[in-house]
Amino acid sequence: MNQMQALLEKARNDKELMAKLDALGASGAGPDKIVALAAEYGFSITEEDYRKAAGQADARKTGELKEEDLEAASGGGQTNFTQNRYDPNECVKFDKVQYRCVGFLAMCFCDHYKETQDGQTGTLSPVERSCAMGCFSYKE
Image 1 (cartoon, rainbow, N blue to C red):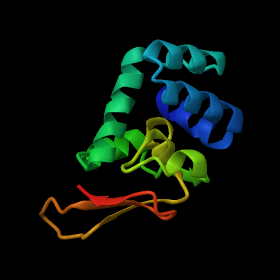
Image 2 (cartoon, rainbow, N blue to C red):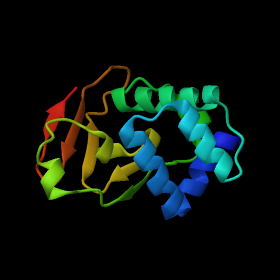
Image 3 (tube, helix red, strand yellow):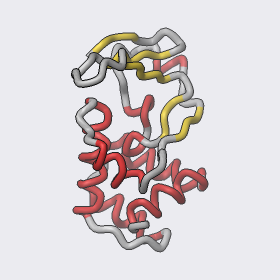
C-alpha cells in the first residue's frame, strides 16, 4: 500500500483526520496543506501524489475513471464509505453534486447521495446523480 492509500485508509477510521481533510478540501486548500497534514500523521506523500489522487477523484466524479485507475486509487478495494453529510440549511441550495456530497477526494459520500447508470455495456451511458433528500436529480 502506498503512502497516499495509507493516508486515505487511516482517514476512513479516524474522524479527526477526516474532519481536517474535509475542512482543507472544502476550503480549496492547495496540495501543500494536504502534504503538511499527512506529515503530521506520519505519512510521507508528495504534492504529485496528491495531484494524482485528486485527478483520479475528478475522473471518478465525471465517469472518466478507467478500471486500472480505480484499482490504483483503491488498492484493489472500494475506498468510498458514507456518512450523513446532509445539512438542511446548506444542501437545499444545491442543484448539482457539491463537495458535501462526495467529501475529500470523493471518498466519503453523503448517505443521501446516489449515482446510478443504465448499465449498457460498451456505451457511455448517462449517469444519474441524485440526493435522496430531494436536493437535486440530473443525468450527465
